[in-house]
Image (tube, rainbow, N blue to C red; front, side, top):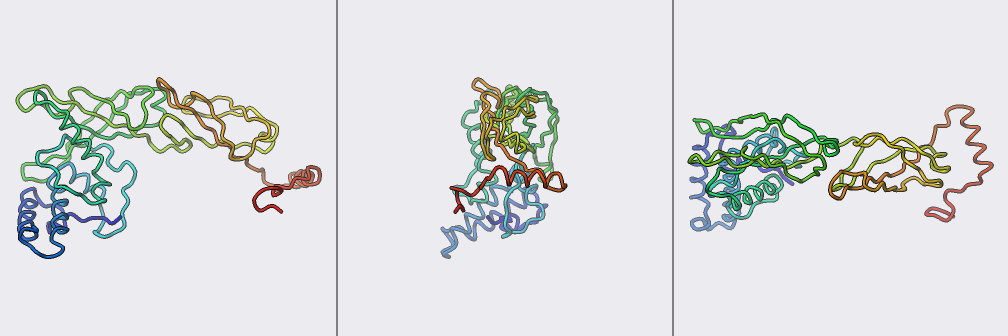
Amino acid sequence: MEFKDYYKVLGVERGASEDEIKKAFRKLARKHHPDVNKAADAAARMQDLNEAYDVLRDPEKRAAYDRVGQGMRGGQEFRPPPDWDAGFEFSGAPEGAGFGDHSDFFETLFGAARRARGHAAAGGRSTRGEDHHAKIVIPLEDAFHGATRGLSLRAPELDASGHVVLRERELQVKIPKGIRAGQQIRLSGQGSAGPRGEPAGDLYLEVEFEPHPRFRVDGRDLYVTLRVAPWEAALGASVPLRTPDGELQMSVPPGSQGGRKLRLKGRGIPGPTPGDLYVVLDVVLPPATSDAAKALYEQMARELAFDPRAGGEGGR
């Protein structure tokens, strides 16, 4: 996917004010609108202009775009980093937002936020302020024990000169035990204040987990690789396994092979129906770096008469 330089599309500098962006869009729209421009690419050009204006006119989208696009040029190969938008606070859909179809680049960055904003606007009430939403990234361990965490959110807004600035606020957030990725935490009254003194809207925090060095998360299930010695796999053993909920003793059945998947029911993320923990065995061979180790391998070769290729792929 190619990076889109929205500033270049509108012909403005990256530090352009709201008025400068608006004037540039209107000037180009009059020139390229298909109703007045009969060029074959007029419709596509107008779509690019609409999309660029949709982003740069909106302080929230623009701040997020500026962050993820630092050092990028139009046409460069682009993949947004994971959770690039975490910590940005978005409000409900602004009046007049949306100009029809958007590119894959736009949908990759803003599709989820745009749908969430539209949902917030559709479900809002005139008797209260606007809801806000943001993504937060927490350790996997919080889902097992719960926690109270201090979080910093950045809310883009326009200053008196029409330039985007970031307003930061600190929140103490209670992370409930059993929360899973994609769920939301609702903070009552932490959205926008009502325009005429009505109660404030709410803040919805969508939860994602930090990448874990050992565990892969799938819903409420967890997957982990457990390294075992050949004799533990062959003879069976009870070996320690560290989990986000503490250490336990894992029973390795006799005759296990590398790649075998063992299920520990209910040892995944807690919940009304807790997830499971799937343990994939990785049989690790000790190195033959000493005379004693080499002698043991030679003895095994003589006495076991084992052919790992017999009857399998690549066998005789």
